[in-house]
Length: 132
Image (cartoon, rainbow, N blue to C red):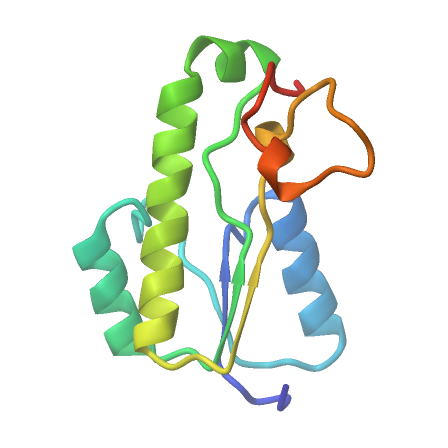
């Protein structure tokens, strides 16, 4: 990536997203784009489309997700998967439409079953009780 490339970090306030921002900043990347959830609701397709049309990032790091503890994940599994799928679909689709050069998507570990054979295979996702 060029040091002055427009780089969008979705989820920049989270554990992984904030680490990405720190690393990119420390390596001299100066054109980082971030938005809080209040500024941009990634579950809203029209808002994500407008953001990508306006900002035109060249690179996207997708570290945004609805997260919660074990209790929240166990209590509201459908809500978590739905909101996260909406975020992922919207950002990935608009990245495609905006012709970003590279997209890095970081998936949630909460979709992996607790007790599955190792090494893990893609078809094991959502096949049993989730790892907390």
